[in-house]
Length: 423
Image 1 (tube, helix red, strand yellow):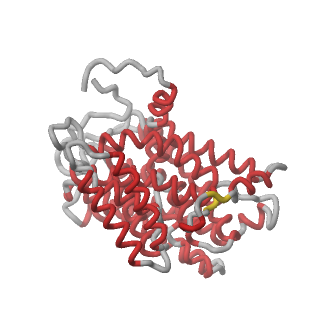
Image 2 (cartoon, helix red, strand yellow; image 1 turned 90 degrees about the vertical axis):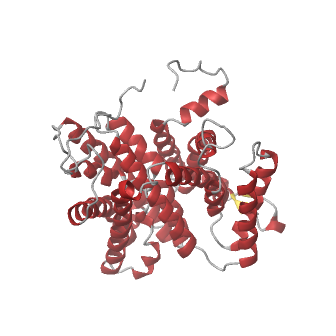
Image 3 (spheres, rainbow, N blue to C red; image 1 turned 45 degrees about the vertical axis):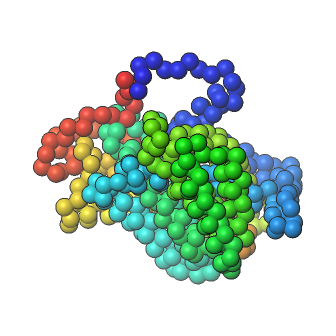
């Protein structure tokens, strides 16, 4: 890394991209879009919001005459999943998931952090008398990477930098498992020919992106066609974005300084964080609480309590409980300088479901009654988890730290802290 930062660009688009790529801004844009949608959807002009969300665009012959809200969920969110795929590939090949021993604890914590909320959700909807809502079991299992890392960057200053790696690993594995869940449990009526065609095009893209000079003029339209075929196959179309990201080389090739997953991830992250995710949040979070049942009836639904408890309580219990068991019953240990107490705020941050949770809510229920309740619960739980996570991060940062926080018998030597200025 050079000592001198590059001169800021005078291009407004480039400046916005650099701003949107910062961890601290992704969550703010998501919150702003969600709040705007909620206000508009419950204002005297709410019919305008409904009309906008229901506006249809696209060629009917290709079965792509979709509403704007569907384009946001199926189309724009594919950009987010492309970035997720690029990040997954980088972490698996050259990052935190490369060494199974080092990644073992956060990977297992991610599994526990998905299983416990799902189980709590299923128990609560049964106990509270709404077994029909059981199909939404995966709603509280997801973690929003951008939002969680933004809160950690702002309020985690002074804590070990390894804590960010732990949360990133946990969130990446969480997203990987969420992708598998969406593909396996929230797809219907598979058209194998279209699915095979999409996979074949992704394989072709994998060959092209390894060339010395990838023909992006060809890669881009092939990726769009792969998305269309994935949409036609019955598998959620965003999976095409993940697959394209996974075929990009994660080690430098042809003498390049950085891997293409890193370079392309940096290029697409501003588009994802600054445009795709806020637009998706805008069309997904606009729940109408004025007409129909009203606020009291929506908040009284069993699915609301199940999602709230799953995200806020289940995530903490799953992450902390799994980590405590793993570090006590197996040779696996937390990374240097991280203690079990540091995972209380991490568990809370993992309860910020937002993006993927909102997507799963839309895929889970055919009726607006359960969908609206689930979305309101996701917004409330994510806000509560973010606030509690921020408070516990500051509490943790103020407490004295031991010489051997991870209890591996070796004094901690990793002194890097969140917020340190890098040379």
